[in-house]
Structure formats: C-alpha cells, structure tokens
Image (cartoon, rainbow, N blue to C red):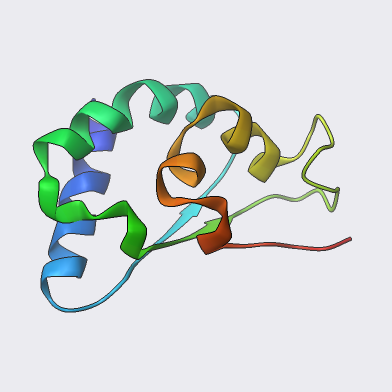
Length: 95
C-alpha cells in the first residue's frame, strides 16, 4: 500500500503544479500489486487525476501487447495503472 500511496501522492503533486504525471512501470509482481493497491490510493488522492498521466511500460521484451509476456498487455488485463490512466495515454512500442 505504501508504494501505491507514493505513486498517487506524486501524481497529485505533479498535476497540482499544472503538469502531467509521467510514470515508468515494469512488469512481474508489480502488476498485481498495483492492480490491487492503486485504485484505493487514487480514491484517497483525488487530485491525482489519472487522465493526466503518461505511462511508459518498461520492458526488455519487444512483443506485441497481446503477447503473454507483454508488460503493457499485463497491465491492460489487470486493470492496473495503464487501465486506470488509459492505455491511449501510454507510450506504445510497435515491434
């Protein structure tokens, strides 16, 4: 929960300063953790405004989003930050 709170607070601060919140996300165990903990953290930090996020999926693999090892695909399926912020606000990699 501490990581999700930190993300939500940093997002609220970035948005409050008139900007956009940019976040790089890796895959693995971070996907289910953020899928579970970020929604309540965002509810507690209403100024975080996920619509003003730019999400970059950090991945060593170059695979399409529907591939089982795609970090972006994992977030899409889980509903974690990429889903919360909208994958249309992510930085896609097209193999």
